[in-house]
Image 1 (cartoon, rainbow, N blue to C red):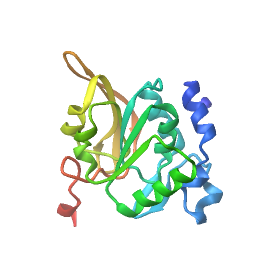
Image 2: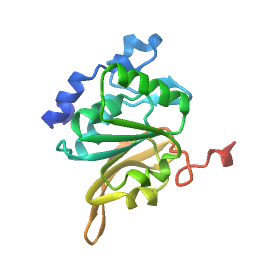
Image 3: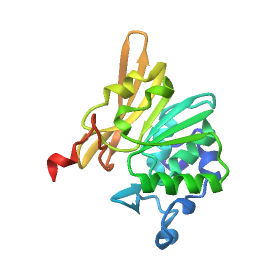
Image 4: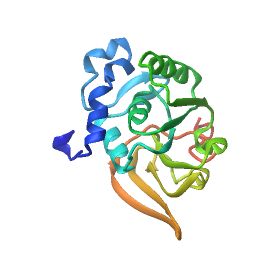
Length: 203
């Protein structure tokens, strides 16, 4: 990751501590440390390590933040965020993935994590506001509820674009509005929900 530009020492340290092999299916253990996404079942993936690191580094975490993660998936990014922040609230729409992730995170004795099953595009109003939001699925536009749940100075990283091609986008909430920065191209699974993609219309 250092060779690809990741320089935040705290981020690099967290990646060294969290073993990716704990979060992938047994059949894919041999590929755990490949810098590529891997299937975790239910038509979902564990993201490429570099992309996860890039997203987290872009949030500029210091260790005091309350963070909202949209798309728990395997729990890999959740675990890394837990080492870098005060509290992590994660939303996963697929119950079986949420349960698997929780089991893995409990085995690692990570205690500052709360996982909720639901529509991540709505955020978690009851626990807001958040200092940072990491969205691990692609949306056609930034969900308004998520932007509304940021603190002043809060940041949100999210892949935005078409179904099969997006750009990692960083939003920062300021006194005068929302600042938007485009980072790099990427490809993520779709963010499904009221303020994301409606897969029923495509069935």
